[in-house]
Length: 362
Image 1: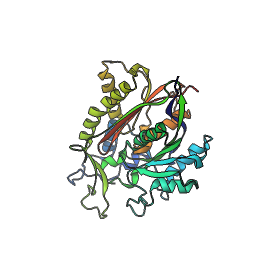
Image 2: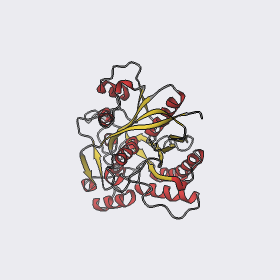
Image 3: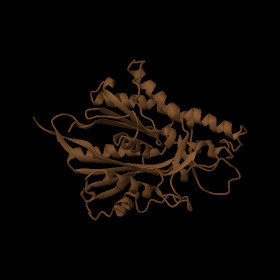
Image 4: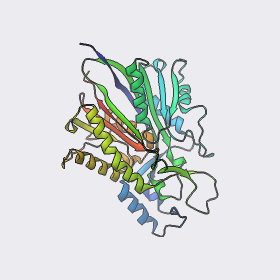
């Protein structure tokens, strides 16, 4: 029997900033709508309604002296501290992000050198054949990096690929836009390696899509909603209702298509690790996914969530979630060898992707 190359996760790491920002911290904020009109409801009511819609109670922000590449390095460092891999043996370092390094004192995107190059530098890797580059793909960027890594590994071009997702959304959100309460900072990383096997393991299937004709600008950069704001920065803006509708339309079908590509019935999906964008939206996606299979009953605990205390850290949500699960730091969400995990994400572009992964038994 011919043995096949598969892409297997052999290490994970994450960095969760220590600075906790709770919903109550926004009660005295002056919020405005998209037309520049101040919101007239009391701050406590705005914050309470926000929590009901998103499930977010608190989020994490980077320290003032940290930027995204620092968080990426710390996640990678955490990974190598928990596995026996040698950084010098990496073939690729892929860093997914969307805004580069944005400092607290100069809120402009800094991409030069690339964040991946900065991480390689911080790790002290001397090997010139460790290729480092960045991947901007909206919130699905980290998962797209995993998909790229799978191509490298299964083609024989690489043996080890480090994929990191890092973001500091707190630096690019409008302080006068209530949507700013969604955003958070963080970083997560995985090490993927090529492994031969007689039976399917690791990444079994994946799929991606980009819808730009009508959906390209559902997430975009624009000025502050506050007409009196004195700065000239551009902030992350989103059309929440249209984004919700897009996600509900595309993500469940993308997951189903990828499960079918892997020839896996939904009953064999142990966990759905979905991008932590909005708690209520993710619940609606899950319900519609099972609806596509005409199943009204959803298995308890199939979709582990961290958004209530970590917020939406964009490309960092999925690798952080995986790291917490594999290191037994998320109660009642254990997985075992042989379990099938499904990853899914949606975000700016608009982009959507999914991956089916089987935990190796040896």
